[in-house]
Image (cartoon, rainbow, N blue to C red; front, side, top):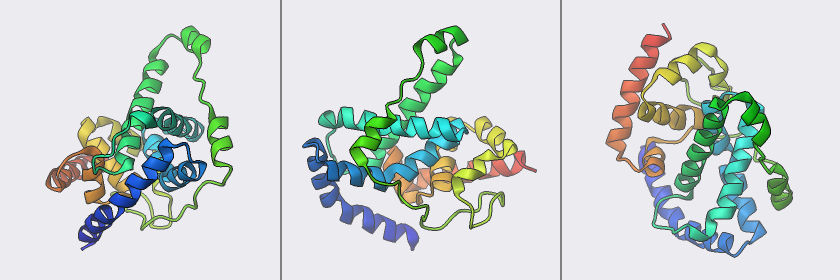
Length: 213
């Protein structure tokens, strides 16, 4: 039932999102504020689950929205949610960050990671969205429903278990249980069918339960 409601919500949001993207391309500060406030938490949770560190996740999340601002003119709305595009930017930002972390220390210090958080703050001039989300998920009983799902990744054993998962399973687990998306939303974001999402989720959960024993 929840998946049917999610599918209906996605379909109903398409015309409005297309109009929102048009305003964002016109550099409407109100449109960018709405995009930021609507999607900040989901992107932050995804990034936090990939890099683990709060401050780094905040910087990289800001970089995602700066990247969106720079790349919006080339974006074409084809019915997929805007979150799918932001998620793709986030994957690239995280991958670039991880590549930089593998470089020699001297080179990293020389180049640095200049993440213009002030651009976002100046553009938005509003507080970040509240913490409330549609339900918090119990991932193999490692957190209670009152916890912020993104905080589950602070457990070192869960971190290690996530890293050991195949990439596609890890992405589904992060988006489903740490970001809090429905299976239908994950399917829209990563471009797979819901059956594939459920299959990846099932295999990932079995592997995680085995590792977390």
